[in-house]
Amino acid sequence: MFLNRLSSEQKELFLDICIHAAESNDDFAEEEQLVIEQYCDEMRIDVRFEAQHSVPEAVARLKEISSRIDLRIVLLETASLIISDNKYDEEERSFFENFAANLGVSKEELEGVLTTLGELNEIYGKIYRFVFD
Image (cartoon, rainbow, N blue to C red; front, side, top):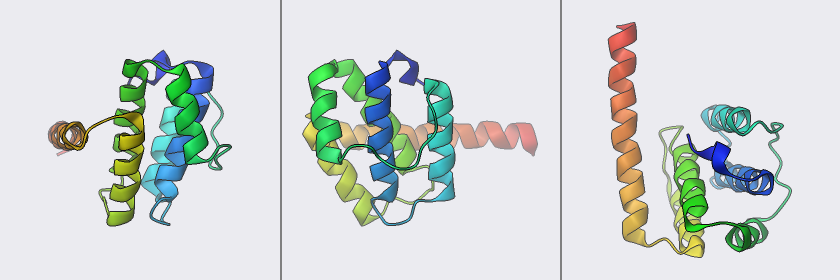
């Protein structure tokens, strides 16, 4: 939704974060792959499923070159990816909480993002059912 605002370098670092997030529970789900493909399309970058940077490297560089708004975009879109397969297990939760903490996002803000995304998914579900039922 907001990924086109990111610079080329931020997009590639965000993609690395997404790959690590999708792999965090050792189940790179098909839904997560589809979301990554959609993100790459939105960002107009090549699709890849292998990270070029570790999480600490990607986070450190993102923090160096990004505004608070950019970091919130990265956090929001990473959250969307993590919940895209309708699973949010302990490994994903741990990954995401650590990622958010490294970006300077509080647990309260993190829970707010997840709640809002859950509500948004419910609305999308209602729209989908209206159109296709």
